[in-house]
Length: 161
Image (tube, rainbow, N blue to C red):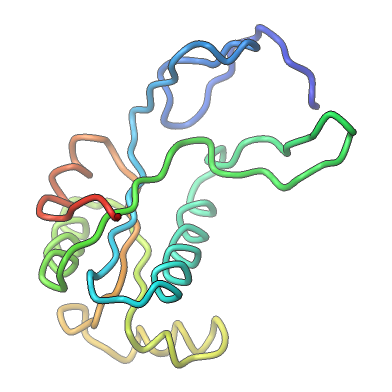
């Protein structure tokens, strides 16, 4: 359905709703953050971010909104309902965030250095499975969880840019 209505909808991670005029501020109870290792090449940053966000987008129902439609009636794929922050940090920041997230039960997606040389999903999973958790050569992680918890997990990372 592509009709604007005033009906409030309950969306995972939101406390407010959006009006048809789109003038209200939407506040999210959760935060989505991608943290990239600070020594990646630009193409690697984009690749890692895309893969990590696919994990976040599929991790829970209702994270993805409705399809988009332009004024001519062309449909486009839906996207994540909430903003995504992209940050950078050293290898130690990623490792520490991963350890803390696991300890707090915050789901995350990981991308390791080895995944740059694999060619498909099964090979990716095998590459991660072959390495002990503390030895993962992380180049990126993505987290979605309560705002305050995620903020604490990514402490030491800085906004990408």
